[in-house]
Length: 325
Image (cartoon, rainbow, N blue to C red):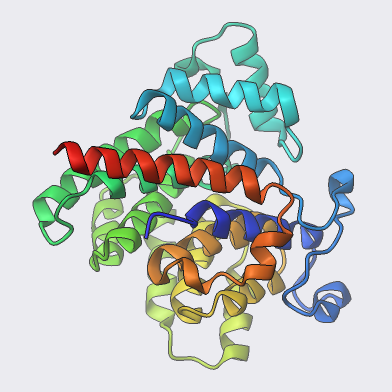
């Protein structure tokens, strides 16, 4: 189940980018066939090209491969390398954080202090490789103590990674990254208690937005018609990290193994289409396997060979680790 998670992520990024900021029901979204890569007016991208979402996720994956574990200094080094080489799509907050790193500011202090009304999707959009890494370390996914131990470490790493770029007074950006990383990790290992655990954990936070929004999606449920569900998603859709993560998790559950349906839902509600579709794509593959990815979409990615190389390298290291135990 470890392979092709980043491929599913990158497909969502490339499919969604041409519709960034479009509103639900807009003509461009209505006219899209739901499966074709289009050029993007943003950043002048060709069909199948990816953005900072995929770029930063691959940077984190490379740091994990290099160090065989998460070290925020290594992650920051690879983020800065990505920024200098190809930072297409980089937002203002992340750009400022990368400039701070380039000035020699240490990763613990490089992040930009946000206001309570800001959140940013950066910490969640790049975090998938951490979930993949800890899923590969999990020997017995039915052992709740082992799973929760790795989940605790994963959560701690999410915090360290999020503050490299985003520092929120109520920890919203870190929470968004942790919620997504936990869901992806649980999907990968087949652990089923993620939603209730997340609500329980975040109930203790001073940030009441997090448990409130988690409950909105949980209470709505998965049994509504497609049109009613899309209207609901559009109503609660936003550019904030909690909105983006919640909608991605919800869509991945609603669409099930239908990868194209998941992509279409994630994109047609508009807003931050590339990040939401990328997060949804990774969740769908993690839950249902790499065979759900349409071959033409994988081959249509401009950098699919590079992604395959990273995934193959991580897969080989995981096999070697298992054999040495």
